[in-house]
Every structure is written in C-alpha cells, then in structure tokens.
Length: 67
Image (tube, rainbow, N blue to C red; front, side):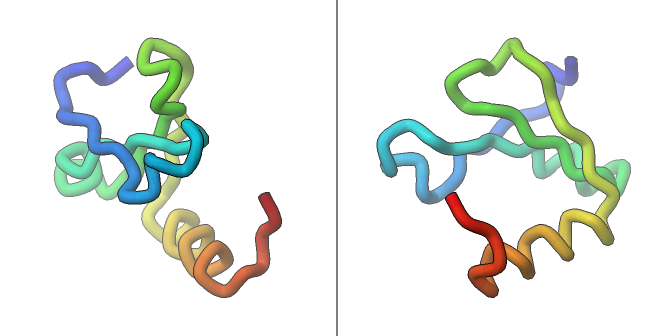
C-alpha cells in the first residue's frame, strides 16, 4: 500500500458513505491514478493509467455508468 501519499476523499463523500479516495501526489509523480474505498483505507487499491482514468471520468460524467 502507498501510505506515504496523502489520500483525498471524493467531493461527493457525503452521499451515504459510498465514496472513494485518491492519491493526487502519486498521480503527479507517476502518472498513475490510485483509488481506494474510503471506508476501508487499509484495503486494496486500484491503479489506473492516466488514459484509462480519463476514460472512466468521461463515462461517469457522461452518465454511461449506473450506480
């Protein structure tokens, strides 16, 4: 796990506890986006290449993914 980086909660974290955290400094250093479940900070992390993360964010903003 990458506890050396500061983790930031989603701005939507007040939605009933279903949110993620990400490590912006890690992305700035490596170009890789790390995300994890904010309810389980010691659990697994997912790593996305910047191109995959951009596609994911676009899909979320475009309403292509359901909850």
